[in-house]
Length: 442
Image 1: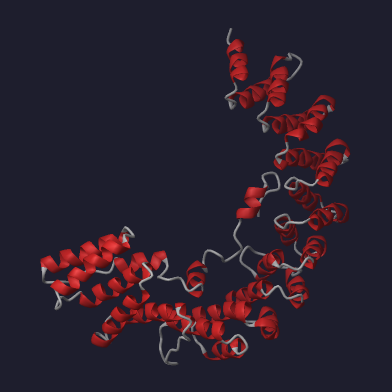
Image 2 (image 1 turned 180 degrees about the vertical axis):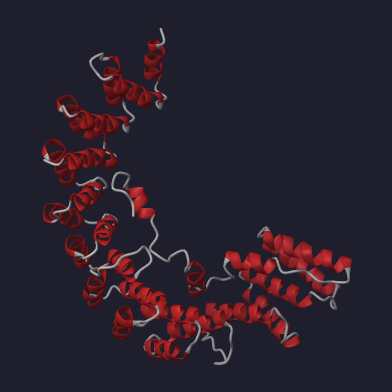
């Protein structure tokens, strides 16, 4: 959970949804990438090379070196020479696979398919056969051909590609096909991919199945995937289900509650803003409520500011109010500034005043100094005055520099505050500031 003291737009926008990193490889497979994911590519390239022929090994390794450097045309030329010069080498099947791979990366797909057919025909039991089948399936999918796979084939990636191909080409039948896989498959990875496909291609028919899995799936990882897939449908029927889950009493960064909050944050229906506000107001878990505010701040639109303003007045906890103020600090809307100024000037709780002061500079609007400078002059609370000084120090313009210089030169200011002001000035490359600091040494 991000502390509202340091909350800003960059941090909010860059935070990945829970589980996104772990699913990266899977999502790459579903996107029908023209080649294996980079990590898999490197793993395949690192396979041990066995050969009794030093010259053949050198030729093969040269081709792989070009692959590592992503010099696809040179790799194809080198591997072609290797296959022609050493047709009996022990690494011939690997060389054929990598030649097909190099062709595919250059969009020479027919050449790649020809090499793969030859590889699978000559070396059906090769350790490279599964990789060749997957690459061949990707090439077929690129041509719009429905990929099929033997139901007993243990290759998960191939089965995922086949399922994706079927869903893309028969969206009406996608839900039934995916449900069949979910009932019969023993592979967690295939099931997870099936849920993603159900959300992406299943259409309105997918909603009941995703709702059921979101509520009752025993495997928590699959349940979280179903929750996120339900959100990605952008179907309005998902909102009440997601709200129900997000309102749960338990919360963790990797949990159904967290997944539901992220799904609401990404849902395109404008009512999702109101639902997130309900979670922030009445959710059973305080961390979930503050996280809902964090994610609400990511959304665009004037209705987000409306909801944040309503939230500030509706929630009783200071901690949640602080998150709302941090979120308002990331909105350009003048209403956000007005609320922050109101809180900074007159809120009864000092913590809230301090948070509002910290939030104002995050808006990135130089004219906001028109508010901060008078606040500094009128404030009598030392801690709040220090917060205002920190706010002034975030601006890099002449008005801010002049105020900081005044503070440094004012003997009535506490010594520590004058030192802090010097610290902010020292970050500037302004020539006038440089001369001022040099003058302090005389």
